[in-house]
Amino acid sequence: MPSGGRDSWRLLYVGDEAAGRVTEAFDGDGSVTVEAVSNPSAATPPRNADCIVSEHALPGTDGVAFCERIREADPNLPFVLYPADGDEMLASEAVAAGVTDYVPQQPETLDVLVDRVHEALEDSRTERRYRALVETVGDPMYVLDDEGYVEFANAAMAEYLGTDREAIVGTHASAFIVKDEFEGATERIRELLDDDGPDWDVYEMSVMTAGGERRQVEANLAVLRADDGTYRGSVGVIRDITDRKAYERKLTRLHEVTRQVIQAETKHEIADRTTGAARDIVGLAIHAVWLYDADRDALVLETITDEGRELIPDPPNFERGEGLAWEVFESGEPRTVEEVRNEPDRYNPETPIRSEMLLPLGDHGVFIAGATERSAFDDRDVSLAKLLAANVEVALDSVDQHRQLRESQRRLERQNERLDEFAGVVSHDLRNPLSVAKGRLELLVETGDIEAHADHIDDALSRMDALIDDLLKLARQGETVTDREPVALGPHARNCWRTVDTDGADLNVLLDDSVTVLADESRLAQLFENLFRNSVEHGGEDVTITVGSIDGDGFYVADDGPGIPESERESVFNAGYSTSEEGTGFGLSIVRKTADAHGWTVAVTESESDGARFEVTDVTFE
Image (tube, rainbow, N blue to C red; front, side):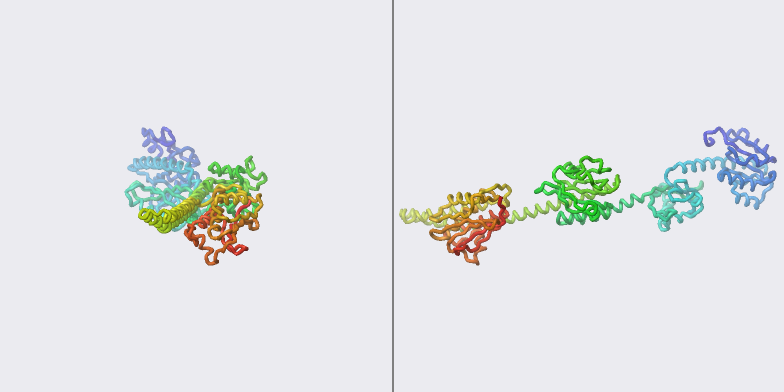
C-alpha cells in the first residue's frame, strides 16, 4: 500500500524517447500512476511526485544536472536515471550527483526499471516514515553509519547540543560523545552484533555540548542491519541524566556521612555533623538543629550554620506552641513552606526567610532549612534532607539508648555493691549477735539462770534488729529524688530529734523556721536521724548537737564529742564501717546515699568544739 494512505504512487517521467514504453510498463500495476513530461523545467520543483525517472538527454540540460537541481529541493526524493546511452563514467557522475539508481535503456532492462522503481518507492516510504518518526520523538536522536559518522540527527538532538543539525550531520560521533565513552559504546555495539539476544541496550555516557558543557546521558543504542544482516550503523536515543547522577552521588556521600553521624557519641556532635552534611551535600546553606529540652519544655538551638547566624544574629528557642517549628515537632509531620510570609503561625512576622523546610527528628527536636527566595526547595532537596533527618533521628536514638544502657550498668553495679554489703552483713555482722544469742540460749537451757543470760540474749537480738533495720533502709535508697517539696529545715530537724533515742543529749537548732529547702521529706528525715544517732552513739555522755546554715549553700550537723580523726573521715561513709560496738556501720552510708539522691554533697570535718561536723552542701533553698 502506498504511503500516506493514497491509492497509488505518483511517478514523474521526464523525457520523450521512452516515455510511452515506461507508461505502458506500469499500466495495470494499480499502485503506480505515471505522468510524463518532456521538459525538466516542468518537473522543478517536483510537485507531489513520489519518484522521478529521467532520461539523460534533456532539452537544455542533462539527467545528472537535473538530478542535482532536484536534490537541492528534496535530498531524499527517489531519482532513477534511465539514459539511452550510458557508460561507466556517466554512472559514476550520476552516483556522485545523488541518484537513487541507474538503469541503462535496453529492451531487457524495462522490467528491471519497474522493479527498481518499486524498490525505491518502498525504501522511500520506509525512510520517510522513519524520519517522520524520528522528528516526532521528543528525546534527542541520532543515526550513525558503520564508521560512526552522523547520518541523521533530529531537531531535539541539535537543540540539546546547542547547535544546528547541519553542524552535526556528517561529523564523527566522537565530536560530541566523550572519546573514552564513545569507544565504550562502540564496543557495546560490537557485543550486540555478536550476541544472540536483542539488538539494543542501554548505555551511560557523557556528551559535550557546543558550549563546552559536559552532560551525562543514558543512551538507548540499537544496531541497524542491512537486508543481508550485515552491520550498517546504529541509532541512539539519549536522555539527560546529569541531575539524576548528581543526586546519586549526593546519596552516596550522604550514606558515608551518615555512618559518621551514627558513630557520634553526643547529641551536640550529631547536630554539628548534621549541619555540615546538610550544607556540603544537600546544598542547604541556611539551616539549624533545635533539640528538645524536657526541663525547659522547649526546643533549644543546638547548632546553626554561619550563613544562618549571619542572617539571623539572635536565633530563637521555641517554647511550647510557638511557631511552625513546634507544630512540626509535635505533629511529627514534615513541612515545606513555599512562602513563609503567607503563614499566619510563623514565629517572626519580620523574618527575612521566604522558604522553609521543617523536618522532625522524632522526639528529639527539629531540623529547619531556610532560603531568602520563594519556592527554593525542589523534590530532590526535600528527599535528601528527609533521608538525612531520618538518619539523624536514628543516631539520636542510639545516643539515648547508650546513655540508658550506661545508666543501667551503673545501677546494676551499685546493686551488686549493695548485695556485697548485704552479704557481708549477713555472713559476719548478723552472724556474731546470732551466735551470741544462740550460745546464751543454750546456757540458759542448761543452767536455768535467767539473770545471767537474758540480758545478753536481749542485747544480741537488739543488735540484730538494728542491723536489719539499717539494711532495709539502705536497700530502699533510690538512685535519685524526683519528687521534691519545700521543707522547713529547723522544724523538720526538731521533729526528727524526737524519733531518736537521745540518751540525755541536747539539740540546738540555729536556724530560722522560715529557712526552707527543696527535698524529699522522708529521705531528709533519714539523713537527720542517722546523723543524730551517730553523734549520740559516738559523742559520749551529755553531747550537744547543733544544726545550722552554711552561707546559703547548705546546712551542717555538728557535735561537741571527741570528733573523727582526719584519716578516717572518708571511711566513715563506707557501708559497715563503725568504731562503736553499738553501731551498725550503715548509718553514715545511708546519709551519703540520701545526699547523693538529692544531688547534694556531704563531707565531715571538725566542729568549733573539736567534735564532728557533717556539712551538706549544693542544697537548693526555696
